Length: 179
Image 1 (cartoon, rainbow, N blue to C red):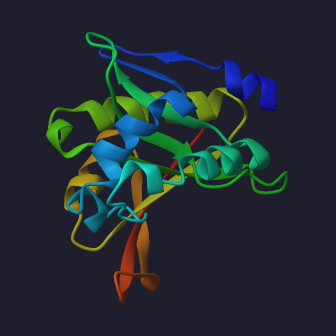
Image 2: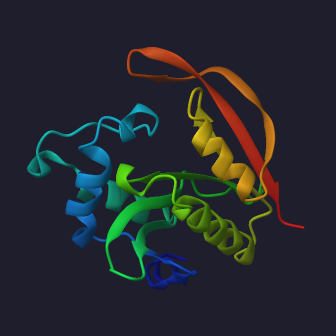
């Protein structure tokens, strides 16, 4: 699967999803890990300087676990604007996977994440995943709208499911089944 993962490129109307690579470090740093507002709801570490951004470790974790991690790229400009990935490798029993994503703040509310998420869901279904899940932290209704636009159904709230920014957060959980 690793070789297949590294060669997979998905193309949509306005976006391309291709495997994250070392050349994406600066864009991911600038758009996500160096923006406190993005990190209000995307669980990752704020990094002050790019030299301290452990992007290589993240890439290795994706490769080692054989999970898909894509850069979200604007077709028109070739600019990397975010990332979308599997949170874990699906088990042979469950055939489900959770999707996580983050988008640079200047690209919010333009429909990019809905397009990327639809592409990712379709791709997951094409490789045999039965159930795709995603969740967002309380207060991030925009992410919930993305999930709904992609045909996902609200599954429930997990109370105090995540400890982040020195407090517990509820997660709002969504799913879609491959029929």
